[in-house]
Image 1: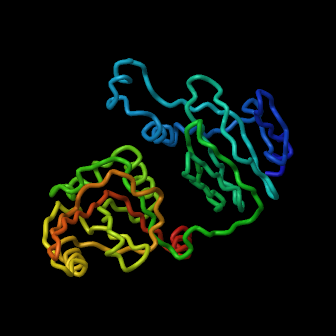
Image 2: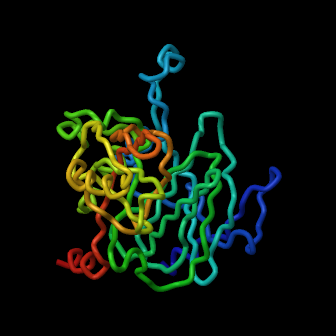
Length: 319
């Protein structure tokens, strides 16, 4: 690594049509693609296929694109090698300058080398996604994003600090696509009918050896929830139900959930996205009292990933 660092030159960046050197903004070494060779290509590892499935618009669903007759695919072109070394290697928030009319995004590949810090942060509107690749590993890590996404490399220090879910937990992802998940036969076809990014999320975490499941998640009125940060996930996909409740409808609803909508409670699920709008009625209820009220509870298809505690993960990796 030291020999490679000595070969690098300080990395510049584009600003106002010029290449600028400013280590307060970007501190890294670089090699242009003509200065090194590597036997890694993302196509060989299926990375380009995943990018095509998640970032390219599905031609079959869009008449405008289907009628063009063009071949649509992803071609990755090697640009350069950047090395961010501790202490203080970084690249502050910026947006890549497209290098052609056909460029629609960037692919960042992290070669395996143990380090601390240096997380990649990608921002789009109000959404932030962090990639922490500091763990010592023999695996290639990567991230792909559209060209208009702001991104930065946080400051690299040194060493190694495992801080991802030390005690384990559950990661959640609300499905991006709408599914008829309240039909009686949905449990027979899920997760096999997941689409696009939903299937990518499911397959990616499953390939890591984690327990992954697709299930309905119930949206609850705040008035009915006594415990904070609780997620009710169905043990299976349920059809739409109807019921009636008396004046003590809160207790009735809780009883109904236990008997008619079997579920498991998860506390403090780390959701990767928000609830969104792709939800369907799960059950209706007519609450009787001084005034009759129609209640409707919605559910949403989601993906839950169970992450073991850090010690358990390390023991499995070393086994």
